[in-house]
Length: 412
Image (cartoon, rainbow, N blue to C red; front, side, top):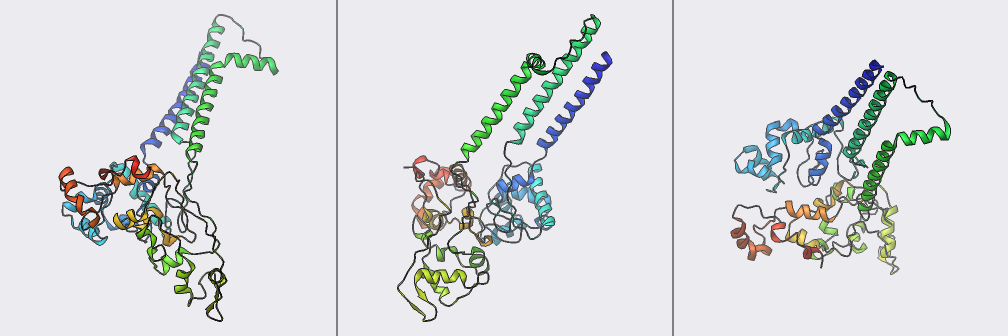
């Protein structure tokens, strides 16, 4: 009987060791894909296209790993040190400072490894956090893996200890000549099993409650978040063709982005600047362009307006809650923020979609990380010297330091 107990202990210890080893190895190895999507995709893609920063396809073959680690961790320190590669990259991209990242060497190496794997596996892929056209959609991880693993480990430990306890009890009963109790079936057996496994039942109830509470919290936290929202519009307008292929500047159509709170939707009159002459598109032919003519009342054959108009019922994609104030001109004109920073690689999107989460936490983090472009900016001329005196001439002046995280800035 003791041999039976030893076998139980050996098997259970082996199972427990495997679980601990798996958990340790899982937590010890950084997830390069997750780190890349959390820190890099606002400015870069694994491809050849330039978003805010350069495309990162095969970047591991262009620079040594130790240099990439230094560059990713603190690019400005590398530039100030006079490193020729760092200075060249900095000047090539209009001296736009790359955000510094507080990442370990292993984490940065995992990001580089992910870029290498992605470059080799799918050279033409353009990875964006929201799975935009040409990219790889992000999978929803659902319930946190670590918490699930912890609960599973506790459950297995509980089962192991329970089996050890019962095995030892059998040994004691055998030595004392106490016969094994008869096994009951049906309702009687169920009642006996419940009485003998009260702790297991209690633990299962607690585990289910915890899992349900976390899952419910995540469901509530996602209310109102419309990331990846891409509705079908009444006219199939391809940003990929207009912005990506024809290189039309965003502000040509959305001129309000520099002048007012709202970026604005271009009127059909603006479309007619081109489509009075361009009557057929490369993808949809005349079908979609004819809808513009119908909306504005344009007779293609007579080359004149009929006076019969029909409004286009565009569906809004980006919709902040009314309690939040956002001003496009403050960011685009004054702050010099590129459209792609919030809206992503629009030139790659056939159907426009909400690229960023647009949550309060996302905005605040941007205000904490983004340096204010004060040099040569008349808007900040009156306060530039004051902040230099307060934080020092070489300090990184972020939006947060200018009061950009105060509640009344966005909520009043």
